Image (cartoon, rainbow, N blue to C red; front, side):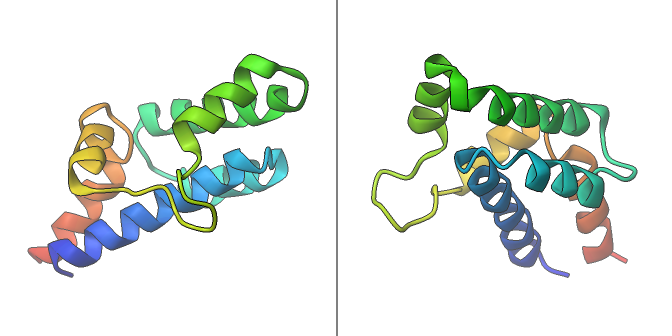
Length: 110
């Protein structure tokens, strides 16, 4: 598995998660967490819990809706939030996806 494939896989997961948050899809986020948290870094699980809580309160909380709109909504309708390498590296640095990416990169070199 090469680095580009790892990047595409991880950025695909990011966009899937952000789509669920934008739709306030708590059940979808809980399923996403169940599917993607096994063996992952505690920061990743904490981040998913935060996303679930954000989606849960957003329908009745203007501040949460504004946060989702400003942070997780693409500027052009019908497109995805761009997950460029710099943004992805920032997510990785902050601890999100650390274990997942490490597993995938290890596959590249095995």
